Amino acid sequence: MAQKKAGGSSKNGRDSKSKRLGLKNYNNDYINKGSIILKQNGTKFYSGKNTFLSKNYSIHSKINGIIFINKVKNKVYINVKKCF
Image (cartoon, rainbow, N blue to C red; front, side):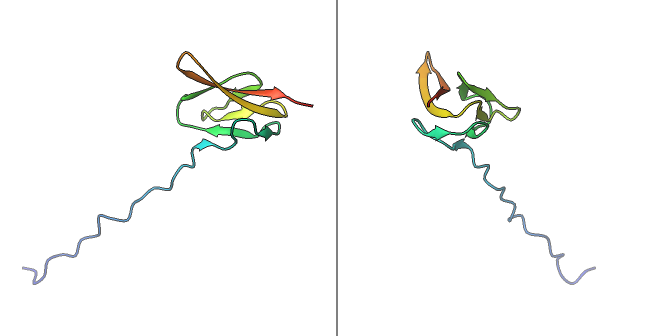
């Protein structure tokens, strides 16, 4: 028989990295074409005019312009308006 109990490994030390989700540019901010406006898991926010939803649900800008966020019937839409 063994004289000492077997030394087990620690059950701690497995914390995952944060995903850096959320708005990257806010309302009335100027944004360039192709830039990320928002990162999210699932569709909490919806893409509106001049924006598109990528495969991982990030919302990007299609044009250079100003970001507008508005709520319509419990859905929040992110739009980009062209400015000169």
